[in-house]
Amino acid sequence: MTAKKRKLISPALRAAMLWPHTWAGVTLGGLLMLIFFMGSLAVFASEIDRWMMPATRVGAVETGPASLDHAVLPAVEKLAAGRAVRDWYVQLPDERRPVMALQVRTEAGNAGGMATSDGQLLPPVGTLGGTYFFYPLHYSLHLRAGFIGYWIVCFASVAMLAGLISGVVIHARIFKDFFTFRSWGQFRRSLLDLHNLTGVLVLPFHLMITITGIVIVLPIVLPAGVQALYGGDVRRFYDDALRNYSRPRSGVAAPLAPLDPMVAEARRLWGGGEPAVVFVYNAGDAASVVRINRALRDRISLDVQPVYFDGVTGQVLKYQRPGPVVATHRVLSGLHFAAFDHWPLRWLYFLFGLSGCVLIGTGMLYWMEKRRVAHGVKPGVGWRSVAAIACGSTSGMLIATLAMMAANRLLPAGIPSRELVEAGLFFLIWIGSAVHAAIRTRTDPPWSEQCTAVALLAAACVVLNWITTGEHPIRAVASADWAVLGVDAVLALTAFAAWRVSRRLAQRPGPDLSTLAKVTDHA
Amino acid sequence: MPDALMLPGLFGLCYFAFAALALSVERHWRDLVDSRRAPPRRTVFRLRLAALLCLAAALSVAVRHDGTSFGLLLWALALSAGALAVAATVTWRTRAARG
Image (cartoon, rainbow over all chains, first blue to last red; front, side):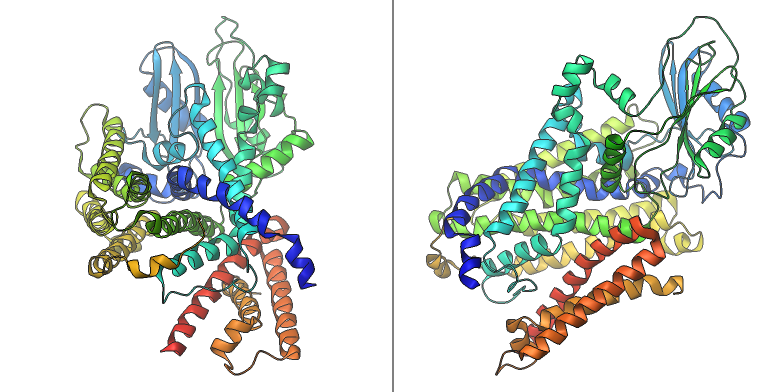
């Protein structure tokens, strides 16, 4: 039986799998780190939003607005400020976002804003926050033109998938080492143990999240079908697949029918469930269309079950469930999005996302430790580049993220394009920390210095939140503001951990070069 | 089962299942139980059976509490969490045993 097992994965196959695994990790590790880290943050995007938008911490709401017609329509009018409204939509309040988010498209530009559930417009939030900065960074790198960011992220995800599978093939003693993490002895062995441990034990999650991530953007990255049937128009393809409805403006003015009966009718069609988003297309036109999406909080599938109404008569125009392929795609996408309300699962997604960062990070560190042999005490340009990328994409990215959150609390509310200043600071500081890593890398990247910076910034974020909003942990507990308390707790934990790490690294002796000579294979 | 006991029960069962599996691995048995000999065959069998029963019980807890779809997902992820916790325990105890 053992002979059979040995044949199943031959040494030649292992060797053939090793070099793509290594190359993919070394070249794309930094990018994958960004994707996994921002994806983990995106799990708690709403909570980060509450932290970064203090005006929206208005306490939990029990249900949606009492009346769309009374609460939402006046807010839309106020946002339009006298210009003729073309289309608008409102995301209704829920447990995690106690305010409404409105977006209005007028004949002269767009306007957006937040409002309380009774329709009071809040001052501009002045930040992109978790939902509009960290989350898009996860899937598009903010490179939307021509879907370039999607392509890059998807390419990296396919490499991740190949890395996961080839990693399992390479792993020689997968069951004997199943629970093994030797934190003592050789540093290199500890790194490999940790790499194998996170890779094997969290493999179900990593495979699921990588595959579903690719599945979501399949129509974009495998465009042949869309090209052949829809002339490359992705929007028309999605409209068809998701059974959407649209019609052009008629040019004849007509008033909007009351929205509340439409919501009641949508509820009846869904057989229970809450409305999440209400769209009004061609507002004030005889051809206006109202679309109501169902909330996703009680299901895995991302099928929002849109119901379309005639905006003038209030009659249902279209309500059609997707076909089996699209329904499957919606379930797979939903597995990735985790839009449901399930706190244990939310935390598991967050922690396992971070375990992906550990997997990628230990992989890069293991490569660096092994390659010291070839490069000796004075490493060459190749090793130093990987070291700088590893440092810039781990501690550097943390510094940039935390600096953006600190800037969010420090920048005055009134400055023009405040949200863009914040985002610009993120990228500038990230570039700065990467340059710092590149300059200061000698026998090792400046881990200790960057960890100190992470600790100080994380602690500063907690203190700044306290000073600028008056919301300290005790008050957050008292007012049951779990979102802010949670973000503060994770920040405090980050500060503590980073401080401990930086102290330990500062006391660590240089790399033990005497053990390097033993390494023979080239991983 | 009361709501408050669901999560501790689920994660506890997963933890015990993987703890039993970890003890059935010769290296950890020698490090943690008996350094002189490998685990007897019968013990290995019993440990694995216990692990299987714990995993099945965990699945039933998760599915009964959260429904089929959420239950399955929660169970699958709780497996990883339990295994990671066992790995941490093994490292901690082995390190302590080594002095």
